[in-house]
Image 1 (cartoon, rainbow, N blue to C red):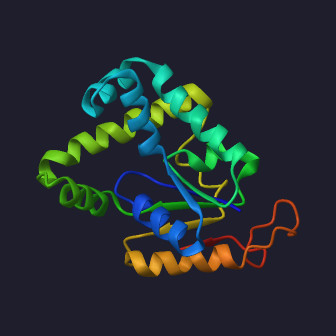
Image 2 (tube, one colour):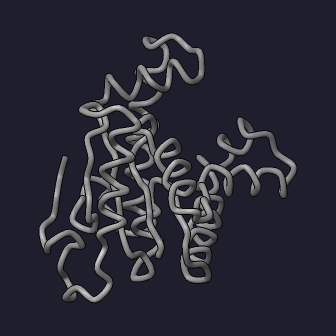
Image 3 (cartoon, rainbow, N blue to C red):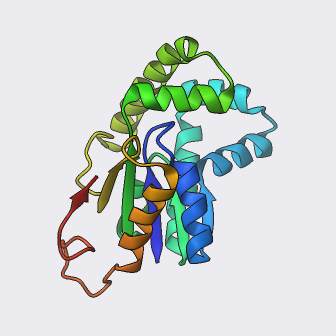
Length: 192
């Protein structure tokens, strides 16, 4: 089974994807890890590579190509990135989108990076707008379109453990023989 975990920065993607992979004994591949390996391959620090990515669309395209290739070649995988659900295409069995209100996500990022919330608020807003514009320009993807996801979870409502239980229940009850176009749990799309 291929499970994708997507969502904006600070939504809990990495925490959920790692925990889900452990619980299911699946491999976990992170778009962030792929990005870091691309930076290493080209001899850049992460900061330098991020700056370069703003001006060189080939960096995003290389990252996304690796995500697609990974989805095509592997089973028993949790693939995590902002666009994992889109990049995995028909190879994904269960697509999960995590989200939380902007302020909650900024507070999480501030805690994780030990930065002041006020300092991060504008940079995160700018980052999200820039990414949305690039996704639209590169792939005609509206990042706000949740229609491809089987499960959408607002992680501000539940802690990481409960979010994990929700997604794990969806994965464990997945029916691969379900009708085309149906959602995995009783044919109903759940948004939490």
